[in-house]
Image 1: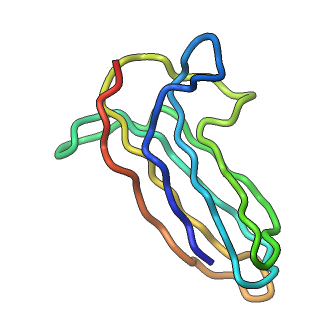
Image 2: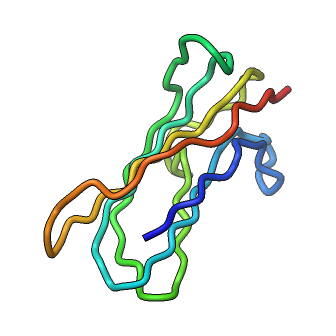
Length: 111
């Protein structure tokens, strides 16, 4: 399983230009998994505040890619200017539960 967190950015498809980040997940097998993400505001070095979080369950088939977004479209949206970093944690839920991978995007300043 491989994950690739994208940098936070303003949505060009939404009229309010909300802030979000996406993670692309690909897998070599068929495993049910949970992806947890958080969008955090704060400087590159120093304390950050979680402004949005998401948890998504999915099955990613071998050779396919799934995209997970934070925040989810049906949740509160973020539009405040600032410095943002996206964090992600991927866990397999079966056949044997376990933490797979975690990572983060670059910290980017958004106006």
